[in-house]
Structures are given as C-alpha cells and as structure tokens.
Amino acid sequence: MTGGPPIRQRPSPNCGARRGGAQLDMIVLHYTAMEGAEAAMDRLCDPEAEVSAHYVICARGSITQLVDEEMRAWHAGAGRWGDVEDVNSRSIGIELDNLGTHPFSEPQMMALEELMRGIMARWSIPPERVIGHQDMAPARKFDPGPRFDWQRLARAGLSVWPEPARGEPARFRADAALFGYRADASETAVLEAFRARFRPGATGEADEADAGLMRALAEAYPHG
Image 1 (cartoon, rainbow, N blue to C red):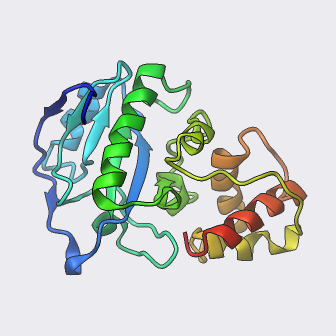
Image 2: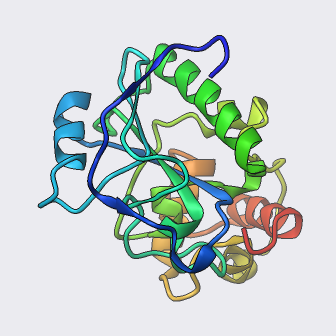
C-alpha cells in the first residue's frame, strides 16, 4: 500500500487455488471474536483448524497477510451472496481484531480503508461487492456486527449505503433476495443481518423503513 503501513507476512497453509477459474470480485469482512490478533492468527494458521483469511488487522492498525490474494482462503465457509455459492473462490477475506462487543478503533478503520482501496483497485471490485460475513450466512454468522461502521466505508466509496425511504414491508424478503441475501434463509435471519449493517438498533418486524432501504438497494444493486 503506497504511503500506508508495512504489511507483515505470516503464511497460512489453509488455502488453495480458486476453483473453476473463478474471478475475484468480492471482499468479505469479519471480526475475529478472539482475545487478540495473535490468538486469531494462531488459529488461522493452524492446519487442524482449516480456516484462514487473506488479511488480519489488529486493533492498533497493523496488517498481517496470511494468504496471497490470488489464492483461495478458507474464510467464508458455507453461504451465498446473490448467485455466488462458492464465496471463497470469489473473494478476499479480511479479519478485524474485535470481539463484536465494542467499536472498531480509528487506527484499525484507517488501515482497513487503505487496504481495501488497494485491493479494490487491483481487482476492479465495485463497492456493492463488499459484504459482511453475516450478509452471506444470516443466522449462522454475526460478523462484523452492528458496531462496525458501514456508513463510514460508504462515505469513502468502499461500500454502499441507501438513502432513507419508505416501502412495502410485504416486499422486504423478495427485495432482499434480489439484493443478494440468500433466498433459503428465513426473513427473521435476513432482517437481523440487514439491520446489523444498515439499521443497527432497530427492533420488531420489518417495517416501512426497512422495506424502503431494501428496495433502494435491490433497484441499485440487483443480485449483490
């Protein structure tokens, strides 16, 4: 990263070739949910754990690369976004040192933004193809969680954010599938994932505000 902090290298054995010549066109954000970045990297580099990510960013903003960007890291697991079923083969996985219970630090967010700018430029990844782990695996995963500042990324051109609008709650689930949330997930799971990202703190059944935001996303970015 030009002008950015140096990137430490700690190769993980938990990777392989991207399957079927898949084109890299996504970024998936995670939190580590562990006590410290080093503990997370120990696990991500443990062959028995069979998990990994391309990058880990600690709370102080230092970046460690575990898997080469051209390789398939094992960070996404079972899940789907739009018509993409093998998310690992299409994505870069970035783990953020956080338990999911507190805000992400300023040095960490600055490092993430710098890292993402480089990745998105190298691989021509559009902002709408940046998602959270919970987006592609609602009900099973909950990261990066409601404490992550998605709106900040959108202001920097690194993600998307819909304009407030009112819509029809009855259309919420269909529009969610059009935007990218997996069609076989329950409306409750999808609503929770959507609100964690776009309406943190909202409760109850899907309402006109949820429906309006989802309609705007589905119209602007069909199939994620």
